[in-house]
Amino acid sequence: MEGAGGPDQPWGMRMKLYGYYRSSTSYRLRIALELKGIDYDYIPVNLLTSEQKGEAFTSRNPFGSVPMLEADGRDRAQSMAQLEWLEEAYPEPALLPADLEDRYTARELAYAIATELHAPLNLPVLKYLKDPLGHSQDEIDTWYRHWLGRTLEPVEARLAQLGSGDFLFDAPGLFEIVLLPQVYNAERFAFDFSNSPHIMRIAKACLALPAFQRAHPDNQIDNPENTP
Ligand SMILES: N[C@@H](CCC(=O)N[C@@H](CS)C(=O)NCC(=O)O)C(=O)O
Image 1: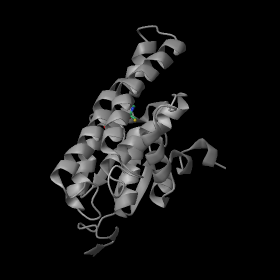
Image 2: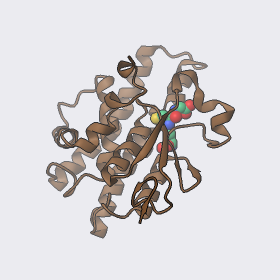
Image 3: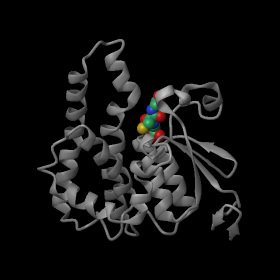
């Protein structure tokens, strides 16, 4: 069905993604929407001014975090649930492989990053380390690299076991959607990827694709470098 919001949006309304250019979870959603070929409006939410904590936003999303996906007249919070919902609402092109065990592997790696790596590196956690706990920026950077390594190392080891190619499976999907934003953040924190050839190969292959390029933080309207 063709709706006003673009091809194949069953409810005929264009989706709205509320996000922030550097937010890794918003980046996940941008990649997924691009891979699925879904037309959407990107509405910046300024995390630097805590716009996500204002009443106008929290009355719609009680979690007070981005991304928020407005689709089908509903405000959806939580990126992993949004990704799973998108996959069910728009099965094609699939973000998960056809084979049951391959789907398991994609989820194992994606959820390891989402739950064990991203969670302790979330902005409110980092802010809390600084105030009230009083840690220095150096200590916070050490914390950041510690939690990155703790999950990226087993992810790399799993990829080595699987002998993956350019992507985990034939095409980029759930795993790459969650991986790429974390690689972007890790590079900002000067994480040493010299022992992560599989992650690096997959990241490079993804960044060569237009969908990943369009979703990249560098190409978002709320990136200050893009403001005239
Ligand atoms: N579990 C949430 C985490 C979302 C999240 O951490 N969003 C960050 C940006 S990456 C955010 O909005 N931080 C600001 C805040 O929580 O105040 C999800 O996956 O959507």
